[in-house]
Image (tube, rainbow, N blue to C red; front, side):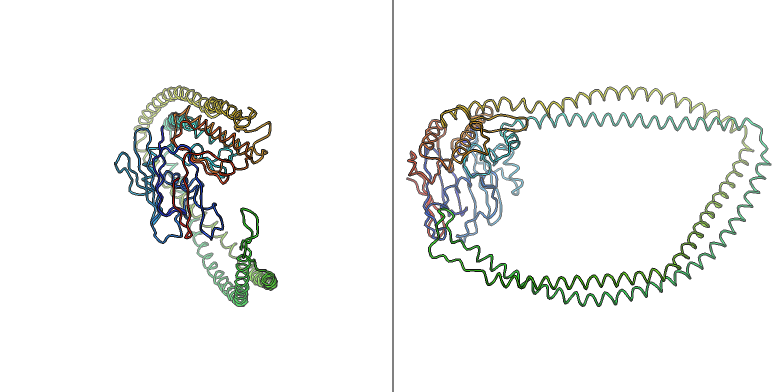
Length: 624
């Protein structure tokens, strides 16, 4: 991908009013700032030197290079409109992207003079991601806009996080995910096939078990049918049992009715006790709620006064009388004392604590009173509840007997009817039973064949799943390292090459260690380096990654923005870095260098972009 930025337009964005910045063929361009806004108390800081770079990232991703997506309209301008317009070319396609923040968020996309925008922001962002999916904040902050304080600086990540970033930038993560998705999809299909085969085996086995049970039952039926039977004696015996069961059922129903009467009487007594308990609890709660209401009213008044004092104290303490840049006392700024307010706050907090202690004591008494009411109620209702439990047990036992007797009656009646039917159809039933037994036997033989066939199919699917699982393990464990090995080897060679130019030695190491990417110089981990060493190491690594993107993904861009990349460097180190940048950026049309040390370091440049912030807090662009 060849990315060529042409122009960016800022309208009421951050500190800007309306400004247009031509990005083509600026060669080495120094970006300096002049801040005339007295509120900022600065001469250069806060002018907006870096804001136009953030605007490029905002137009493409919806957030600045610092990761900010809200509060970006210039508050010093009354006009509500705020947008960024970006003109650029990707390969042979011309783009014009306009991202609005105010009066509402919107995104307009023009590709080759054709509007391809969606109906809303989400739909438009999906369209933009389809056209240029690689232009993420991570990529922009890794190889286009480089700076010491930016969140996407490679070294900001943990050692394991660096590996994840490199996987995304080199697209190895995408390739791995694509393989994972394919393997997972195949695994799902095979798992579904296995589940279907297992379901068939289970269903056939269940059906076979059912058929075998039916065969056993049918064989018993046939055996019974073949034996001589005394149908008259059987029916007489069943009718005697039916009469005895009916008599027992009537006796149980009578006992259940008596228990229902007793149960109603006991429940009425219990209801009266409940009413007495409720009245006692209500009286106690009313007394406590009256005290509680008074407590919360006093507490609210004390809390409001304390919060007001806290706000006042914090406001006074927030006054800045020391310059954050130079550490000097700011003229004409006096920070008042908060001693009186803090003393008053201490007294009020003490009163609030005493009030809370009093509330806690009263609450414990209230809880004790409620517990005493519960104890009295439990004592008064214990015998009643015990009687109810006994009655319920007797009633439940009676209903269980009633259900059992009813079931016995149904069973006996059914048996009598069945024997009468069997008596009339004895010969026909025997013949039918033999036919059923024959059909069931044939069914079992058919199921045995189907079960054997499905077991063979299950073995085949299981073998395929085993192969897929092995492939999945390989992709997760070994293949990821293989994909990254060439990328890391290339970056490491570039890191050492650039280390020779900037440090004068090749002692800068960039290596994969398990799931981590370790960065060290002269044997010291990156985290232990000095500020100047970190500055140079960051720059070397970011340029090496930029080379990797060009080598492996054919990515290049016509601009490079270096934001305060000379921080913590003395003149000698800065000269080495500037010489390196001059040699490195031959393929870049416009290299923008932002630095507070431009004059003292004598940074060479072909053009100068001056950001001037006026006394009203509005920045504008001047070229020299």
